[in-house]
Amino acid sequence: MKLKVAVIPGDGIGPEIVAEARKVLDKTLSLFGHEIEYEELLLGGASIDAYGEPLTDETLEKAKKADAILMGSIGGDTNTSPWYKLPPQKRPEAGLLRLRKELNLFANLRPAILYPQLSAACPLKEELTRGGFDFVIVRELTGGLYFGNRSTTEENGEIKAVDTLVYTKSEIERVARRAFEIALLRNKKLISVDKANVLDSSRLWRKTVNEVADDYPDVSVEHILVDNCAMQLVKDPKHFDVVLTENMFGDILSDEASMITGSIGMLASASLNNTSFGLYEPSGGAAPDIAGCGIANPIAAILSAALLLRHSFKLEAEALAIEKAVRIVLEKGYRTKDIAFENNEMTVGTAKMGDLISCEVTQ
Ligand code: NAD
Image 1 (cartoon, rainbow, N blue to C red):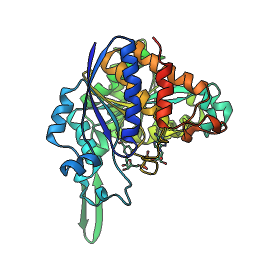
Image 2 (tube, rainbow, N blue to C red):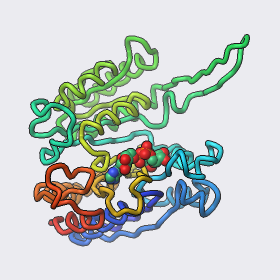
Image 3 (cartoon, protein in one colour):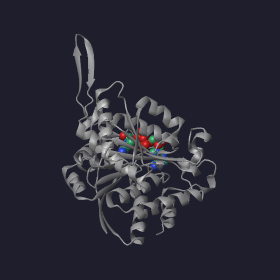
Image 4 (cartoon, rainbow, N blue to C red):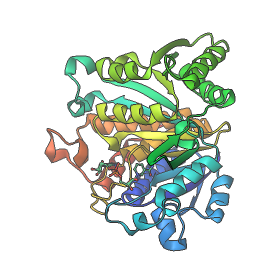
């Protein structure tokens, strides 16, 4: 197979970790007899510096022509970077939001995995997490509160701010189908999160999820209110397999999930539309505090490359080979600084971690 992948190294640690993801991807694909063609694109701060805007139309067109996008992260220090003196629509994040919207990337997958080898990184009690856990959050990404109408007005001397939360049935249905498909590949257990006791949009969410569920009789469905879900994630994380939720709830719950896995540097993500196209990136940001130091954890970027193989190219054996290589390297005791707790002499830098994982990839 020949894969056409757009690469967005981005800002901060982005270029450092994407280089390691490419290293592992190249090794895996050559081992399994595939070819890959990369096209590098600028987004965020790097694009502002080069072209004066965070996403150009040319970049967007090139991104649309790729089969998938592998991304690092964008942005800088929001207190000191000149990018954040620009109006909001010219800042790095505006480029990423536009890219997601233009590519119709409505389903965001964030696997939350606690590797047994990293249990010391988990802030929860050991008896709750023994043996690790592995669930995935499927978050609706292009609707809801973050894409509603907003306004700030003054009425009778009082300032009033309004944000609207809108969901259509078809928006809910398409992300629910994605989540059910993913559940079929896993333990066939889907938990849908809403606030149906209060919100109309949540009542439509629950009704639509139940209708979609009729097409997936092998998947068990549970509904849970978002406040309860926030509690259960820290009380019983092993209970979860696939968590389906709307945009804002997913934003908050996926950060909670990343906290209980120990390090943001371990967490991959995928943003998908209704074709095989996807954008794959670490869950963390550009980490300007450690950019250029050679200590960033590249595992989230490497695992994002595995998701790219699985979801955009259906290369399951190749994706598993990368995930297995990561486990082997952790098992052997190697750590980057962010996950090095008790075993400091096995602490390695970004490039070395990429080399170690690359060496462990086997067919
Ligand atoms: P951040 O995720 O960049 O950093 C938070 C903390 O996690 C920092 O201490 C950082 O050093 C650490 N960290 C993150 N990734 C790491 C890795 N791979 N290895 C080791 N440590 C890692 O969050 P922030 O500081 O809030 O944001 C910094 C910039 O990144 C901002 O401009 C923000 O807007 C942007 N951002 C971009 C994305 C994206 O590109 N999708 C996502 C989140 C934040």
